[in-house]
Image (cartoon, rainbow, N blue to C red; front, side):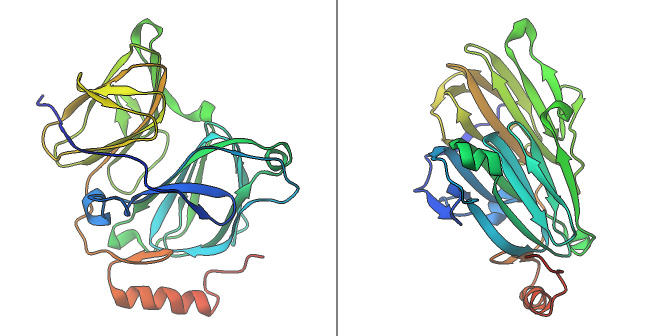
Length: 291
């Protein structure tokens, strides 16, 4: 195995509000070097770094909005997110849980802080990824994978050094809980101080990590602080993560979808004509109805 080297370390961009419930740093595609094509199949990453929301009777969040052409993956680290959609689905994403929503042909959606969390207030921390779909799957039927933390398959590191949650893909023979349309690895490494975990992805996979908690060293030398993002070069296969203190690290790698990307707001398709069609379909009610 040859080493997968760091191409770039990115500090969190200035935060902005999405609705009134999500204070996010947008790494993909806003940060330098993290375009949709460069990071494919990961075409968006909003990171709500740990932020305290005071108690309120209002449900902070994002109102009704459409999606078409991709999947949204919501990973809750602190706090709880409730959601509803135009197909009648609803639920709560609790701490440690993952929601993998395939918007595909189109859905209306809203998401907001869960009612009791809103009343109590507290630290809120989450990641939302958009994972692109290949052209042949963009107009497939919408679906959900609601994955509670106890359903996420885990690889235990030796000597009680921590574990790796395998949300999607594989890690050391452990298969991910989520099903995907293209090869995607999505892993939460939860490491005790001094622990080291080794990762192997094909050189061609677009690969990155986000330090959610603590601080780490990559490949034995590069120090990475909390809330920083690491982009790896598309060469080599293996890299190591060592926890300088107790740490949580989101690791992502995926086979690029080498197709044109046409994106506008909540729609990600292959051509501009398909974007126009998405707006037309939304305007005439083909995405359903949601209050």
